[in-house]
Image 1 (cartoon, rainbow, N blue to C red):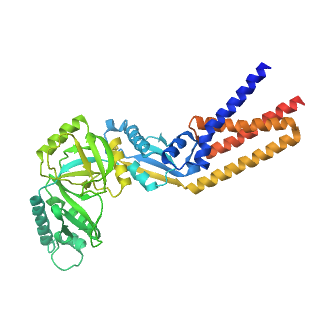
Image 2 (cartoon, one colour):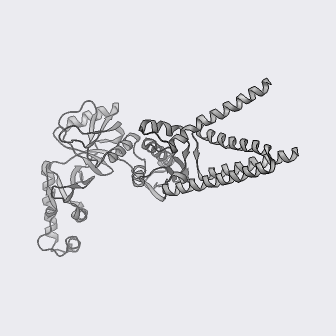
Image 3 (cartoon, rainbow, N blue to C red):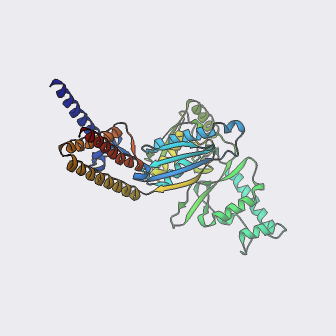
Length: 435
């Protein structure tokens, strides 16, 4: 009798343990708490749904090794995979799948991601952060005069065909100055409608730009008081004073000062070695402007007012809080060691995943009901016992899945349905032998 008591207690304890592990799943999907922190805690303990059930994105990335030496090619894919993994982990995706495929490809699956474009930008952005000093206004003005002089002289000469293609049949002397609006601080502003024209002019007159200088565009279009859109154009020194390797941490806050009131700001701090470099650069260029450049786009160009000794600074210019958070993520995780191209992009909508869940659940319930009814009608009391065991079998499978933080996919649902059939088959064999 004592042996049966322990057996009964063990069965009851196992059932209760299974229900304990399944309760967070029930709570998350059918009775979610309103508190975000509680919801997140419950989600961590519930069964995760795969890409085919809750929707998301499937990407195939291909590394471009064309610009790398043979030595650099050996581990570049693994290094790129590590950077992408760090970014996705900080992005907050549950159960991402990241693996290497072939020689140069990386496959990324992100279940539950709804903002597809944001995820693609975060993964594919190389994030090459550089700090460069702006050229003095007098040098930039002299170069503008030089470019306008070249355009004026070229308009009637043998090389006039390219200049005519840029300016069309407009009357007057071709000029870069006519497309530039000068703002406070000496920044050049170019209308969004004229941006391609200005780029064409700069390409045509690239030979006039000093070897130690370059033009770089601002990261975003700015809306003026009259509703027109302009983008800043900077003339900077080519020399890279610092890179993103000096960044130790980056966090997003809202601006408190009048200049950046309520704007998203990235506060970053540098490594111990970065503190020394930052101190040297800011000390050498006091009262000059330093451009903070990400992937050849200038995010901001603050004036160095004093020598910065603690290695702390800010990056402004993000259009919203999400953009600032994504930039902070790539700064913390580092830049990709090589260009990465998205060669395949498949998305699964959440409605399709929901349909798959509903259809799979319906198939499982119908199959379970038919099998249980057959067992009861054909085997009587033995069939009822088998049905109870069958139900507990499913409970234990789902509880183990939840307990180990597993992911339920559409093939997984098919496997559970197959488990029902195999369990019944075993019971039928046993009952027929007993008969």
